[in-house]
Length: 446
Image 1 (cartoon, rainbow, N blue to C red):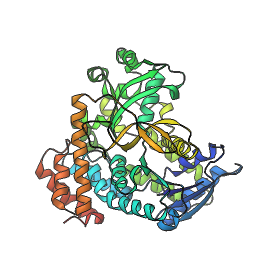
Image 2: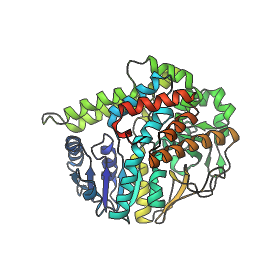
Image 3: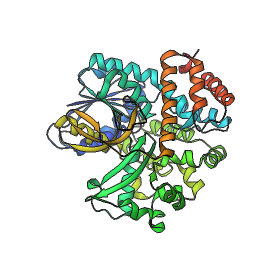
């Protein structure tokens, strides 16, 4: 089986390859094609993968190319992990937004909209090429903003594109851990929303919902990351545990202040950090794998550090530093390729799952996965406050898709102005001006 990774020079690719090395079952991936526009990044990541595979019998063969069409031909699965504009673009997204006093995070608020406007045209082009060159391939999308990009690609690939994210998995794992669940994989996580905008409303083990026990125990709530991040009072008021990214919504003022006072934005930190890794990985005297592992450890330890500092949440737990999206990707591929039935939280088209949204809206929800793809399960309706937020953000995503399709600057302004975290139409107009000034990829907006 052949897996093509778009953005194959990306920093997280060794996580995926490591998961493939651990998979020894029949029908596993035997060929990996890395595609990236940056040949230097491909060489660096290839060195890491070669060191990972050292001594492993029948390790998947790795080839590299800068040619997108060449990479797609013959693929069984296409893993999309591109970053349009690179980390420099992310740093610019954050800087322009913070100058206006609004959030610039890469998937939330103004930064997420800017990133989406840059990324959607490229993702649509990829989807069209997959439909033409590899019509039987399944596309697994991790490109952010993951829900928005998956929806853009689904217009051309239908249900053969599925978005993944490690946030719901990590959240469910942490809740199961503090509740003492021996086998977290056997727990049913009642999670629903949009990508980076969802809530755990229940965690069932043996037919019993254990979440009320957590919500009633303030000591337990203070023993894991989201409990410290949001605070016991707020979680008890919600009657649910939000995805960590909802901290940007519920504590927006404090978060924006912390980001404006930081020495560097998250994007600038990652840009400088990963530049050091890629430079080190070209030195034959340096172990590329060890350089990557050191860089990854620092990256994971500093994840959402401003939010945790604002909330007084302290350092991340050691158990939460190991990643996770690569395991979701492998489980998804195995379920489809081998018809190994699995239940996974994924980004898929809504169909009739949430009545407040139309059939084609991509949501994040538990799915039953097999050879025919991923099918969302029926879930209880969201409470009104969550439905309102989901509908507002989905409306913004639809304006982003419309702006990307039409090239309309007015529609792009509308997308920014309608977002709950952008507080003025005048600010929205200045954001569009600021982003088009720094991003050549937005020149299509007229």
